[in-house]
Length: 152
Image 1 (spheres, rainbow, N blue to C red):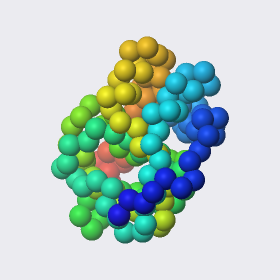
Image 2: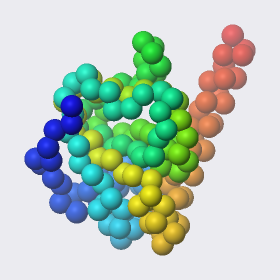
Image 3: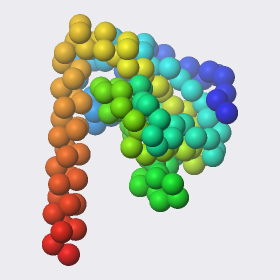
């Protein structure tokens, strides 16, 4: 299960972690400094379910360290590693999770909850730009995969 918060990052380290993510690479550091305090550090052991497909989501996770498997039942959709993000759609829209997430290794994750994130968006709409960009990229990738599958 979840462990204690032994190795907390300093605010500046959280800002640097956020800046290293594709989601926030174009977001100015002063805005990331407002977002960083929303990051809650959680440590997990291998084999722990973070969330299940079909559950209502209201947060996203950043992988500080470790590997997380994104899957539907026994089918692996992705193995995510350090400095990758998952569950970000739930930060914007509390809908059901489209897949499950399970730790593959010891993990240090940073959780950002929806409600404080919404409050930040009210003050800093620039943060939404990173989300819009990454979601557009994902849609393009999915459309391309769909086109390739249809042509085969």
